[in-house]
Structures are given as structure tokens and as C-alpha cells.
Length: 95
Image (cartoon, rainbow, N blue to C red; front, side, top):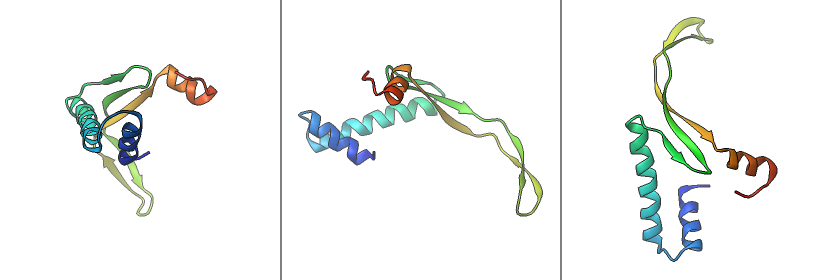
């Protein structure tokens, strides 16, 4: 599902206009992005917990050249699905 499809879904299920739905989606995405940038977690009950995570620096090998290289530490995101969503995906049960 793309951002445009999410906007279309909101339009179909609410009385929002296209611009209102687009603004709502943009606001939610910006709020989540801002929290993760600050290192905070985002908890969406019944859906998932999205956490900012920092990986450690690690050693790797370039298989083409056979040389050792270091992959620097990076900030990334971990998504932990809620129990309700896991059950819904695996058993077809509603939330």
C-alpha cells in the first residue's frame, strides 16, 4: 500500500476532502519521523511499536576483492508488531 492508497482509503471511509486526508497522512508521518529522529519510540496500540535503534560498528569482507572492511555504526528503526496484529495476520482474527 502506498501513501496515495492510504489517502484514498481515508477519503473513502471519512468525510475528509483529498487535501484534508493528505494533510492528515503527512502530519502522522512527520510526527513519527520527528519522534524517531529524537531517539524516542512510537507506540501505536493494537498495531506496533516503532523504536529508534543504533547498530554497532562491525567488520565485514568484500567478497569481490577479498578485503576486510569496517561497516560504521548506523541509526535505524526496529518495528515490533503488537500481539493483536500478529494474531490477525496469522489467524485471520479481527482486532
